[in-house]
Amino acid sequence: MAEILIVDDDDVIRDTLDELLSSEYQCETVETAEKALVKLAAATFEVVLTDISMPGLSGRELLERVLHLYPQTPVIIISGFSDEEHAQELLKVGAFDYLLKPFRLEVVEQSVKRALEYSRGLQGNSSSA
Picture 1 (tube, rainbow, N blue to C red):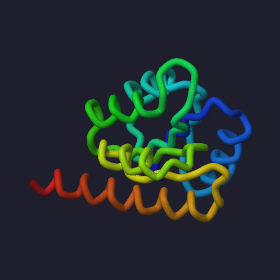
Picture 2: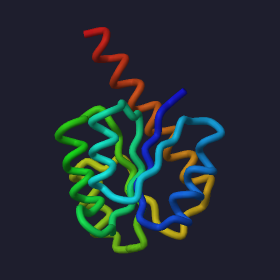
Picture 3: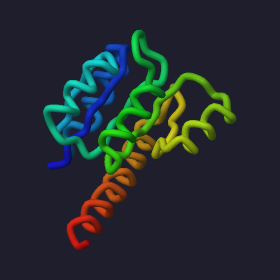
């Protein structure tokens, strides 16, 4: 079962995402980027979903660290900012996807499925190299 890490300081969003995804995936939830980095150091996750705006390290800083430390782990950004330029910048930096709050649950599910396919494709390529 795929492991998903959900990072959001909003309890309602975190719990909603956990409830949505836990029927198909093994989900872990944390409320800060700092706690996410601790989880990532201790276990392998196939996808990270993170809010962009959190106290302490931001979702962007988490994205940059995940890309550096775990380059095969896709990061899906969830944001309340509907700034297209901001979204494009994060995608250029390396975010797998950018989802706006309030999000539709089926959009989240599809994004996670695409990220898993991407992640598994990378893992398959690295094991055959």
